[in-house]
Length: 291
Image (cartoon, rainbow, N blue to C red; front, side, top):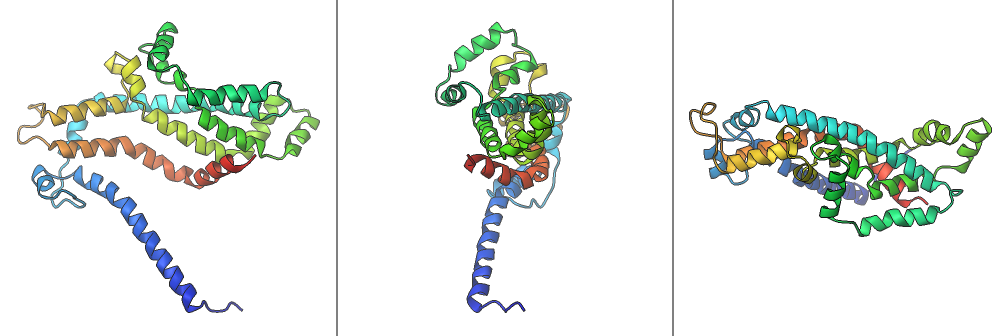
């Protein structure tokens, strides 16, 4: 028979739940402000500095963003870069992390040190640009993918997670005739889905938010990802350079356009995140404390 909770226990549960609800509300309000302001009129934005629910909804900001085929094309480019780049980076990160996690690899500590060293010291922007230029990647989408193939922090998370797997799994696989690639793809990866999902999300968000690399390596505007074009839209909106053939009356407010840009840029990540959230905390914590 389960005894009733004491008054102190019920009070603690109530206070704890109330504090968590307030914290969740404080985190949610900025998103609601951005979303609501993207549909507001200029008069309402000027009258209400912190707007949550506009009294009059208008789609002018979104019509301005999608007034041409530029943004849909750039979103497709960002999608290709994000999916292709994530798969590319995960392939090399997983193979590198697995190799460095093997205790029988000669020079494993030296190689790990060299990887970690690049987290503290790098060549910088100009040497990196010269390397990208010399390899013929300028004005290609590969320039947004190959320079960031391996993020050392993500690779270390995978490496630490792999080291925490039972050694008996590999020994059993070897006894069954598996080679190193068979062990990796048939044993290690299926047992490491939380860490892999977490690191994939890290890479996906990084590639989706690609901005500086596109500015540096892409002079062809047809190859610009969505983040670059959204920045251009914000600049045009702030300068009130609107197309009069689309807006015959008052143009949409610059603040509303900025908020709509944030919504468009963040929505894909917000859609994908709930499907990976159950792996996220587990993968990040296990990959950081094991070994």
